[in-house]
Structure formats: structure tokens, C-alpha cells
Amino acid sequence: MKIFIVAVGQHVPDWAQTAYDDYAKRFPPELKVELKAVKTEPRGSKTVETLYAAERKRIEAAIPRGTRIVVLDERGGNLTTKALAQRVKGWQLEGDDVALIIGGPDGLDPEFKAAAHERIRLSDMTLPHAMVRVLLIEQLYRAWSVNAGHPYHRE
Image (tube, rainbow, N blue to C red; front, side):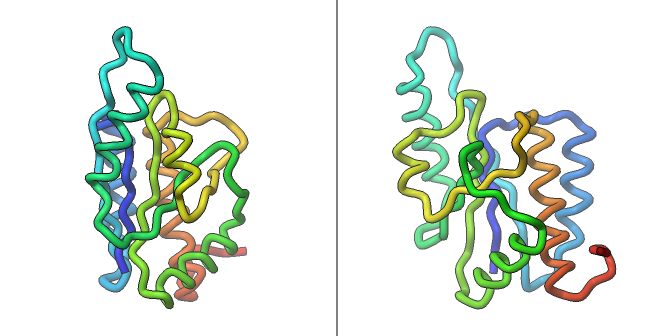
């Protein structure tokens, strides 16, 4: 199984990239995580609809056909770490590749969100996009460790 983290925004601070890379290299061969950073549409005087359309096109181009789409959305469902672990296990059993989508500064196209297979959220708080990448990959690694009985996750 492969998990794609598709994130709008190509530049993150060095500390965030270092933290992301540290977790990414920990995954076992049977669960690969790949980051696909897509370009943020320049803001200028464009309407939010124009921004959504441009970023949606880039996001969709980054997602392989047949991949399960899960968007990170502030109105998405809350998950505990154990619930995320169960989701990951289910995706693995179904053989689905999964794309977890992190929107840009203005979020994601509402129609794209509505068409996604799932909507989840990491926090009730608003988080910087670089931090979201790090928190997401850490929680994916923790979910894997729960399922594998690995000592990383302790109760």
C-alpha cells in the first residue's frame, strides 16, 4: 500500500522538512509514504473560485487514478490515534492506495471536498501548513506502530 500526502505549497521551513523526512524514512516497505507538493496558485487579485480551480487541477494531477481520496478539513471527522490505526489497517486490507490532501491558504475547492471518500481533521485548532505535514506523518507512523505492536506507541 502507498499513502500519498498531497500538500498545496512547495516550500516549508527546514525544521519541518527535517522532521517530515525523519518520520518518512521509518515506514516499512509494505507501507510507503510519498509527499507530493503542488504549487500554490499566486493570489494577486484572483477570485477564490479561480484559486480553488487552479489548485484542484494540480491536486488531481498528483493523485494516481483509483486512489482513495481523504481530505484534511476543519469540518472533517475527529479521529483518535487508534481510530486512525484502524482506518490504515482497513485501507491496507482493501489494498487501497490513499491520498491525504492538505489544502492551500484558502483551503480546498468545496466540490472537491464533497467528492472525497472521507474528510478528517487533525485538530480543532488552526495549524500552519508545515506543521500539518509533520503532525500528519507522525500520526500515520504512530498508527502503523499501533497496528504492528511496535513500542513507539505506548498507552
